[in-house]
Length: 95
Image (cartoon, rainbow, N blue to C red; front, side):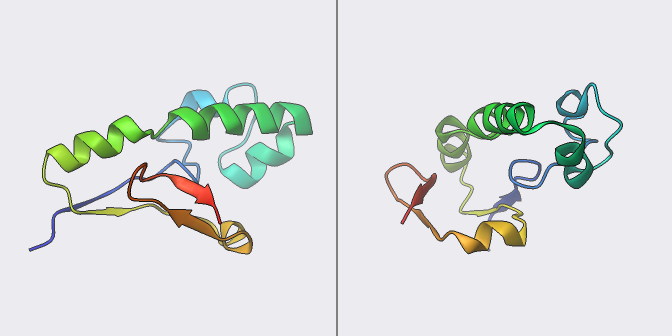
């Protein structure tokens, strides 16, 4: 049997999982969050979130607890730029 987990809210934002990320907006989802913020605020907020929400430390923790598979929901917009997962870091890196 494969042991796995789902790591939602990293690449596809869910307000119920990180309500503070949506502070200062009326947005209920990622699409509307991005529409409610100006470009600079949107880039900064998403960068901080995506750089810190799930890190290499999380993958190390999961592996140390016998987790063999990770599901990371991703929107179709991420398919436009191929990513490669390296064994060393287990994090997305540009191809």
